[in-house]
Length: 508
Ligand SMILES: Cc1cc2nc3c(=O)[nH]c(=O)nc-3n(C[C@H](O)[C@H](O)[C@H](O)COP(=O)(O)OP(=O)(O)OC[C@H]3O[C@@H](n4cnc5c(N)ncnc54)[C@H](O)[C@@H]3O)c2cc1C
View (cartoon, rainbow, N blue to C red):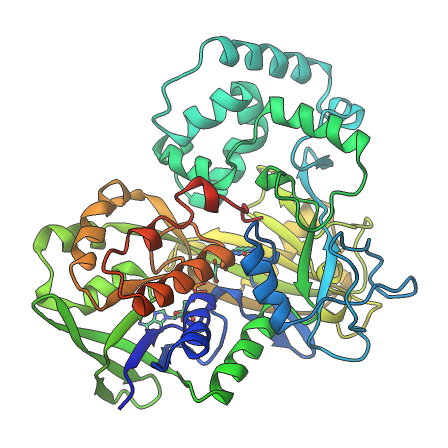
């Protein structure tokens, strides 16, 4: 009888693992997914023919393997001058697929994201343009320049994210553009966040790089899709499935099923049993009926949040590990989809960072600009208002959230309330694993889970790491290779997005 692998979660990591396992081995994958959806955080939610991407997912990776993997599932679009998406052609050469004829196609999109602050738009990342100087005003610009010089001479020891920002941008620029937004995202002061978060999210960005980028951009207009040498926050083109990221993961799931893999939705892992250094079974609860069934396998691959995994392991966990795991923190996320007749200003952006201090709104997505096919009626504007919060807090529990969100957007002059046609609220728990709480002792959890030779942690919350889709997928791919080659150490999996080679894309 062939061996079996139980996979927890049908997000990018779990689905990639199952797909690769079927391609490369005769081990049978059985996925258990707690929700009714495929794709995890990278799913697409359909609402009356309009589609929402939770967070706006760029398909970009510095790993050619990942880029090619995606294109094997959804081939690249053919670029036509008359096409509704007025996008530049990809550096890799045109695809053959006409997006008008099939939904299974990858579009090529240009990136535009700006900062909205002082009721004005600024380039993102901040550029050294006359518009920036004009918007900021002379006094602010002088202050920024002087504080940047000061921080270049007296750099601080980096104990927190605040130190990380100040060392790279100077205190004044940090206070103007980074502090409030970052604190909106995380809900804690930057001085309490570990500098590693900055290193992962905006690695390598600095004033010096911004100047170099401006010069480079001046001499070379088209940077193309590959962009391996670009700093992660400066990437200007990306691929995007015609019907949103969920289409990628639904297509992968279809292939898995067609090859005999099992995907069980509405099935939540609630218990994990072990003996000595092996996992022996998992307890799976049907979310509709509450019935629990025990499943055994040879391998167990987890993309569920580490805190939940350790809790499911019950009494077999040493008390110090349990304490660290209970102290792991997450940040949760609410998106409000608004269907609009029009906006007050034309917005060509994919997304806009809302830096204004008088609203809680963090970011605004303009879905028409991700893919025109996400919007049912091309005359409408379909936008996503993104809020960062903690599950159970005031924002999360607010009953009339849509009205609150509409009022905020009207307050900062982006819409007229009367132009709202329809709306939907989506809550996404544990969107971000946090680098505070007990995170600095995470190695003790890692050491403990590594003792189970048939247990593999993959993905974003699965490894409690700020992983994008590509990192999540790479961790799954390496796990398949380790199983195939009987490699005992899991170090190469933990090294994804921790080593330079994998230091890739920043998340929006
Ligand atoms: C706002 C935002 C923007 C982003 N933008 C980008 C981007 O532009 N590009 C990019 O590449 N990435 C982006 N990402 C990151 C991307 O969403 C993740 O890297 C990716 O979804 C992680 O995949 P995963 O499979 O590890 O985890 P998830 O997507 O979280 O999937 C895990 C799955 O496990 C299931 N699960 C959890 N607990 C259990 C349980 N007990 N039993 C069974 N199933 C369980 C969950 O329901 C979920 O379906 C973004 C993320 C956010 C929040």
